[in-house]
Image (cartoon, rainbow, N blue to C red):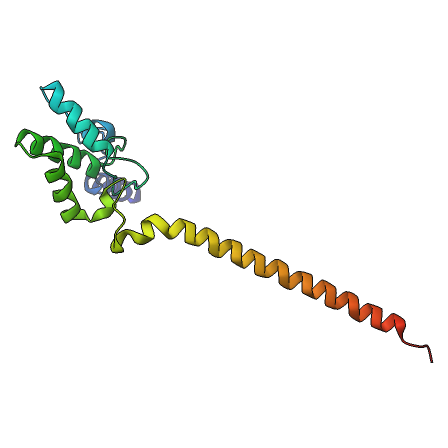
Length: 159
């Protein structure tokens, strides 16, 4: 009787468990991010060039041309739709900057809101060098002061 109850519980759990992705017919990530090229090779070359100028907001270190993230695939589709709609490259960039901010550009313009993107890494390096320099100077002073105190002890007359 106990075995039948356990078997029934197992069957119930198996029915309630979510199906694995492969059983549901899900496609691998790479296939979901495929964007078919435009029929016109000139427009496709324009789309590719534009994709290389835009940053993947998920990966952040890659352009949307290189990224396999679903958001990058959506942006590639959006670029192709806007190119087919007759939008210029500047119009498409302006649209994406308005939507996602200047960070979406691989080379954002130097402005007040992008100042840290351009000069932040250099400022962090300078701060790091400053901290290391102060630490080294303090340790040298301690060594010199400790050495002088040892000399003072040696110069005193024995009693």
